[in-house]
Image 1: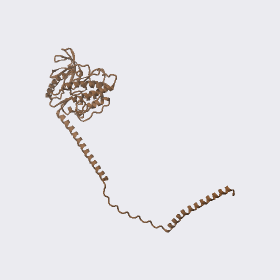
Image 2: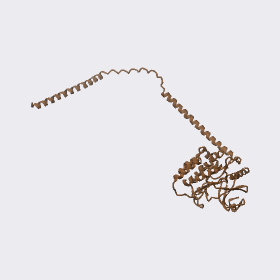
Image 3: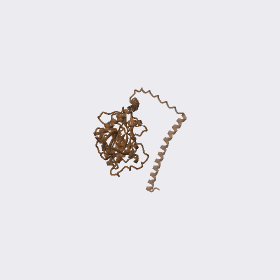
Image 4: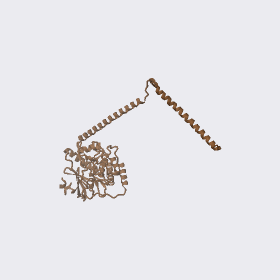
Length: 415
């Protein structure tokens, strides 16, 4: 059923479709009316990707029905309640609580980057929803801006547990295929590992990054290139996150064992809000407002990845890692060799070495005998320096005696 042709249709003999609320990677969400209880509901028509085989469609239909019933037991103020799941035209339809809101993806596309205090507040709401889901044994596996609903007061609800999984239950596989939004998939999911609660925390970090920066943490032109970046690279450092930046870094840690958990994330987000202090309350623009700029794709598309593709990706990553290890080993060996050469050179310089006995120095050559003229000049020079001082001394004594006699004559009146 197309979105244009679906208005006015009665689904499962009970829900009347009225208008489209949104479209996502796994179907269309309609506003509908529950004709039995006379209340508004959100009705999600689950549409499987066209590139799935018939066996995969059947397996995914069965899994969606089972996991939707699992998610229906999750009751929390920050989770859109799942009322019912029905089948129509061979496809599952999820009947959910209707929340007067818009998706975070639509808000960012229309408003651009959101203020970091607002994003911190949204983060706490989604974190509360994830904590409740994990406590019930449910891993969402598809946390992204398209699945976060934001009200006019900026309160947030987590919705669409369509590809959620109940931990501990046997899974219904789709021939080894993995469904998800590459820009928000955790590294362990990209490697094909069994998903646990930590995958949702990674996706929360990627979602908050998109909300505060207005762009993807891992923006690549192809899905597999995006997954490679998720597994092997770090996101570009945020420019607008302010004190929210450490939270993003903690959640986007590739090692799941080192990734921030719910408690640490909540403490950090509350500290961010305390640091924000009293500020004017930001609210989303009206639904009919024009986008702030050119609308950008924010990576909400659900893609299908074959197990063979993921194994090939892991092989490429393993090759890169091996090359990096070999290069590091080569550099370490070169460094060790240079260090050993320096140590050997220093040892040769410092260690005492036996030195041969010094050879006797040759006697200095005798000075040539002075010539007769030179000897005569030398004798005259020496004599001059003896006679002149003696004469000067005699003259000085005579002058002194004469001075004394003149003083005595003047005193006795001889003159």
